[in-house]
Image 1: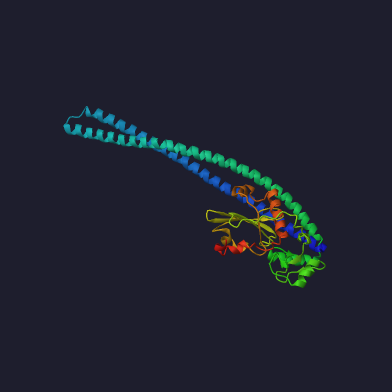
Image 2: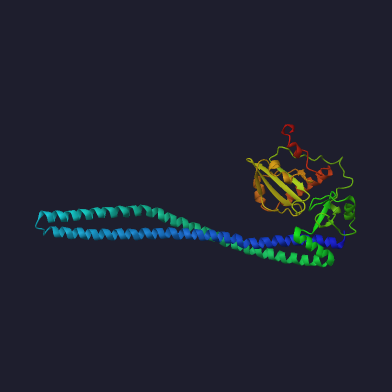
Length: 373
């Protein structure tokens, strides 16, 4: 392989990592902002609960003051009744007393109603205070994690920028301009060739072009996508695999609720492992980089069994692999496969290649004929 091409491979690797790190650095403040927004809502809820308590207290004091005024009126009316000269005057004062007593009972009922509400109001305040305390602790924790992660990402970013500059310095200027121009419009500027195919655009190469790329003596670009092509001979299957003494590879069960596949190329990401899970009428898909085991993109969930839900992810050189890990384990791994899992998938892939499985297994076709399975 030409040194220029080897440096371009390293350059593309650095470009991908730099892009990933920049996205992660940009996403961390947004994640903290979401929590702060939630915290602001909780603070508003607490203030609302406290305001309701204050409003009830003010209303209670108003009713108590009204009762005192009415009691004073009753006392005054009773004093006046001692000096009246006629029955009409006495009856008029008695009606005033009765009316005042009725108003007192109404205000006492309102005070009782407020007292019954007071306990619920206090509970609302305490609950809001507890929620605010928990969320405040959570956001402080998130800020610490975000600061630490940002510092680590920025350190890695500086390292990858240094590697990128070093790789760019080892590439011919004309070739570097071609790489930059294609990468600007297609996301990547260089692509691996395997099985006589450009893995980035999936277009077959002419035999002569394929042989020139394998030879590695000159720089060849894909006629379809214009990416610079290279061939990695280290990924070739052994010329004379020892099959007779090797234990036969178990084939994955067709009806299994979980399936793992290898794909030589996936959305310009290169080689990937894809995990499918069927649960309660839905299919879940996770995609991982073959080399690092890091998750690519988001977890997708669609209705139906995975062969019907994600038909576009099967075929195109995909290989069905053995693998059965629970959904809980997949969730626990988060965005990166454990080394043991990655090694197990790689070993099974090597065995499948040794058996000659270079395309999707027959079971993918059998799904079109349920009676045959």
